[in-house]
Each structure stands twice: as C-alpha cells, then as structure tokens.
Length: 171
Image (cartoon, rainbow, N blue to C red; front, top):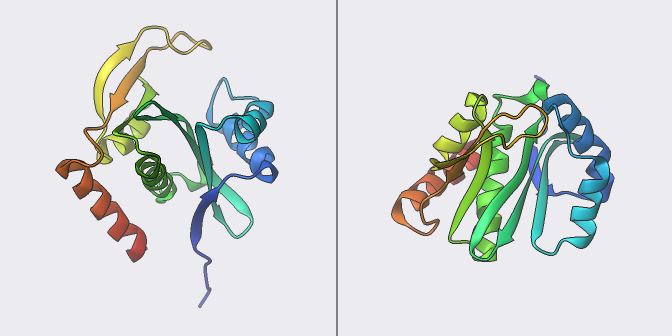
C-alpha cells in the first residue's frame, strides 16, 4: 500500500514565490508578477500569505490583509491538477484562522462573476454576495462580486469553522 504524505498549510516563504507565480500563470489571465509576492512578503505588515504543500510541491496559495477590522482576501489560487481535492478548503480555513488571530470582525473578497467554482467554495465558508464592482478586472472588464462573511465570532460562522476544523482533522 502506498503511503501518501499529508497536505500542510504554512506561511509562504520567499523561496515559494516561483511555484506560486507558476500557479498564478496557470490560473489567471492577468497574474500578479512574482515581484508583487516578494514585496508583500517583505514589506507589507498587514499581509499574511500561506501555501498548501505536499512534501516540497506547492499546491496552492492564498493571502489576506487586515484592513481595520476586516480580513480582505487578496489572492487565492490552486494548481489546476489539485482543484476539487480539498486544497482550497484547507487554504480558506487557514485564512479564517489568521483573520481571527488578527482581530478581524469579518472577511471580504472579490470574485469574478463567471467563476462559479470559486463562488461555491466561498459560499460554503459563509460568504454572501454583498455588492458588485463593474468592470473590476482590467484584463477583460468583467465585473466582480463583492462577497462578505457575517461576524466571524457570531454563531453561524463559528458553526462553519467547527465543521471545517473537524473535516481537517478527519482528512
């Protein structure tokens, strides 16, 4: 029987930037430049970035900024070969844990109107559509949905977090 190593989520390091940038290139029509990740890691005290990895391979990444009392998800990507395998759930749970540690009251993000897979993941984590930004994406002018969670320490979000923590422990 083959032994498979677990997926771990940990802080992004400068040494992860090349792999993260490759996932960006595979995932987005207007990827962030590698230098943007380097600057975020080196100079932005409001930012926290994480990677999901299996052994040495980076499978996905995500970032959050604390802006006053809001955890704003800045970027989120999973390698195409690892989508729909729980990597996104692990990353999202870690971002929520970080936001809670930083004192965020709620979380928010923008999602492409056409990206129903991402919207579905976010909705499972309690995000609701609260607005729309017209022509938000500069590459094609697509609108973005603004999605926000209820109060992170409120009962509905605490239930979401309990369920996801249990899933993480179970798998």
